[in-house]
Length: 156
Image (cartoon, rainbow, N blue to C red; front, side, top):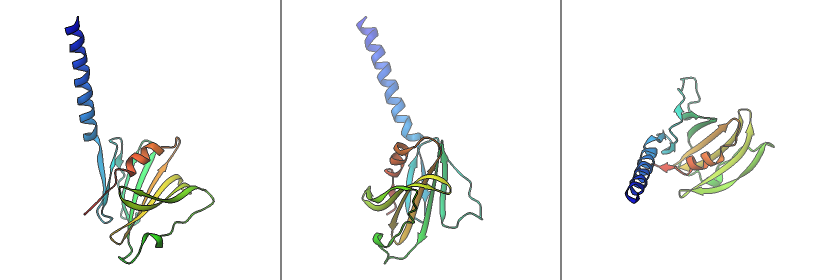
């Protein structure tokens, strides 16, 4: 009886270890070469094909579930500082401020614009302004957005 119970626990433990070792491998990176950063997205996300007519500052667009992630990179020059960046805040902004993620100071805002409800993050990386938008429909994906933005990796 004990041996059978021990085998069941061992099988369960092995299955859990396999599950957790495979899950990170399913994640994928959204890379913005011009902005010098990447984010890790859940495997449910897929890239949205970009057209030549798209905004030239758009470096990637991914969609998964009810979230669309867009990354923009604009060359600003090395003399520009975070305090020089601005955000257009409308009456539909519910929250805004500054925060630090993975050692990078940035501006953030939450609200709604013509495209729908969003989370927006802006920062500077080596003279390049980065704007990252998370648009969503339906249920607020704040935990998924936090997980993604905290996966931020800056190029050296």
